[in-house]
Image 1: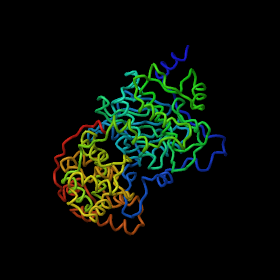
Image 2: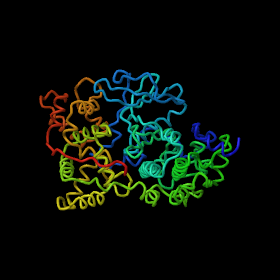
Image 3: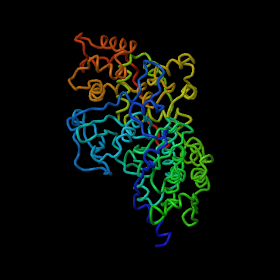
Image 4: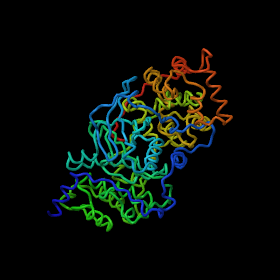
Length: 531
């Protein structure tokens, strides 16, 4: 079989991931797997500077018991892997459809790595990254309840199309790069970026869709300058430095470049009849743009790919640099039509004055609403996020207000106070779900089925009552000795517990959610292409 035949057929088979830690006892100290609490403390998204801080991870609970008591799991599998499968499931109480990943404990070779995967998923909070809602564990299995993406893999879209038009390729590349920019800012390296690990939210065309990054099984904490040694990835997409056992998070950008190349011509830049042959070519780092397949592709696209598939990591583009490249800026421009409105500013101001339980409830609701319901707010968030890192800084919010001619509504002191009040996890910025929680329309979050989901997170034993201990577990991260947190939880319980029986039932919870009216919003939807 000739080389041409090989490259044309190579994408029709999926290549499995590998993970090689090296000889026992010789693994580098900085690359060892960490336990769950250590992992959560090591990821930037869980930074906290205040007793009152509330991380997103605290709101994603681990349940013991049978997941089938809560969800009806469909028999048909959406996907199957080495250690388990993914199925769609329906929440019995609310009818919400989710994806559930079932992992067999008996087949799980590396429990520490799995704990790390869950810990990373808990703190990921970005429009282009899959959402984890909750986990269950019984004697034989662990279940991850996640967002359902029905649009299929990026891999299958490439196969179906043969190759992408540049307009579609740039949109997809933009989604990928935004996810990686955010992950790297959160000090996490994915280490297994490939078309199979990106799902489309719906079956819509690419310009009307959202791409979601999945599968954090090989991901690792990776602060700037941290060197990793574990050889992990997938042959076609892995960076040469990973194969050498000495690399940093720039390895993800190499993979981004390979994915871009593959999207635009239909085959990867490094191909061969065997994995060994592929890896040999990857180690050399040499690739070409075949004139026959690339003659109609712009020089800008090829220039960006060259800067990503750069052998020297020091010369390789970062995600931020790639997003500023002419090809992305021209062919996948960011939205300029979505903007702040006075009602949203009012909601931000009102949110900062809510007590911690209502803020937490709104965060839970915002994190679980469908993309369709939060579409307009998502587009506003993306438009405000000028540098594309997935978080809103004070200057970005200030600039957004100025562009919307709302600057006169708020002084710098007011703006700083709002950011502090909305910034639930104490990171100093407004994260995606924090923004959604603070700006949600009352008509959206006062639906009883929506509120029931939030109530259920607090009501951990499912008896229909939220006790002080359950409230502390969520709001104070289970720390019973923290004087400030303990007092806060007791005060909240007394304020919400209308009948004085020492616990909060669902009716009292709904009364809390209905209090402190915020204005209803009339947000016009805007095109999603510029995400």
